Amino acid sequence: MTEKTKNVPTITKIFRIFTVINADELVTALLLTLNGFLIMGAYYLVKPVREGLILAGTSPEFKQYLSAATVILLIFVVKAFSHIASRFARHRLIAWVTGFFIANLVLFYFWYLTSGGKLAILGTVFFVWIGIFNVMIIAQFWAFANDLYTQEAGQRIFVLVAFGVTFGAFAGSKVADWLIEPIGPSSLMLVCGGILIACIIITWIIHNREKSPKEIKGAMEKIDKNAPLKKGGGFRLVFKKRYLLYIALFVLLLNFINTNGEYILSRVIDQRAAEAIQTGTANGMTEEAFIGNFYAGFFSYVNLLAWFIQLFLVSRIFKWVGVRGALFFLPLISLGGYIAISTGAALIIVKWAKILENSTDYSLMNTTRHSLFLVTTREEKYKAKAAIDTFFHRAGDVFSALLVFLGTTFLTWKSESFAGFNIFLIAVWIALAVLIWKKHKKLSRVTNQPGE
Image (cartoon, rainbow, N blue to C red; front, side, top):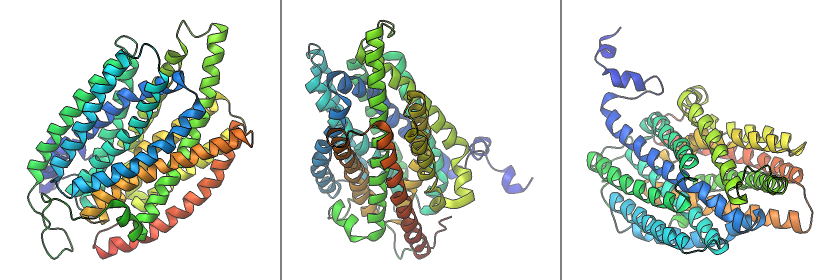
């Protein structure tokens, strides 16, 4: 045993089982991991509520069509976020945005209590709100994380941070599974708001620990990370730089394909719920509760597998093929899943194909695509990333909604046909991954940082 190894604290040695981390990095990394855990846990507390409200009040097709409304609103949300980001320091920016969502949850709580069981309008508004909330709150978290680290440090530490995010999703879905029946959907909204308050506090603690200007390798001067960002919109940054545009299109296709798969699953479980109610095999549950119960269990499986991948496989995959090579894992897994679904869309096949796809997305792909921004500027990390993780991400929903409309209205597609179209999209997706590979390799050389 070397002297250097002897002097490493025991707790640091424990975390080195999962990734390479230094003793002086550990406290901030653990606080950031806790923050990600709480943010994702809060989201998964209300995600089953969203599914129950929208499917009980409307239909799987209407659920897909709402995506267009979400994307339109995100244009204005991204512009507002870019404006606010140019006026406030990062910790104040995050506090204002998170506080806005907390206030919304309180309003939804009282709306649910006074809805009188009329869920169509509430479910519609809540679905659109969740579509904005989950991408915005998570995008700003990862922008903050990117702002804390260089590429070299980020690729190491993001493995641990992303585990917190993944485990938070698993914990949140399990808590939702336990609480949704005894306390009801409305109370979960308030619990979510309380957790987000804790997230604001943790963000301020991290900011105060890391607010000093730091040298960036390859830079000629120090960068003050406590200062507001330069003026300029996120969309302009995306279209100005080809690397960011490739990532934007990659994320768009990722969500297009995934949302098509979610529609297939929603369609199959909606049919199964109706059959269970008609045949009396729903164990006394309403259609809303039956669907909510299925999704709570489904999300638990997804997040448990994602937790395993994140903890034991991601750092090893990064060492083996690098961040660039990791881009190809999810497309290949999705390809296999949709080939299986296209041969017969039974519930068991769709369920486990989506579990494998979503768990890889939430772990390996989540860490990979956020790590792609470590080679970008601060403005690109916050503003361009916000545009990509919100508008372009949700634009995939719009294309999926259009496909559902065409497929169900004019083409009379079955679930197997939607899976077949996904196979075509995956081929384009892989081509974009190749383009990102080339650009990331070039940017890594410019910043003198290893990309693999």
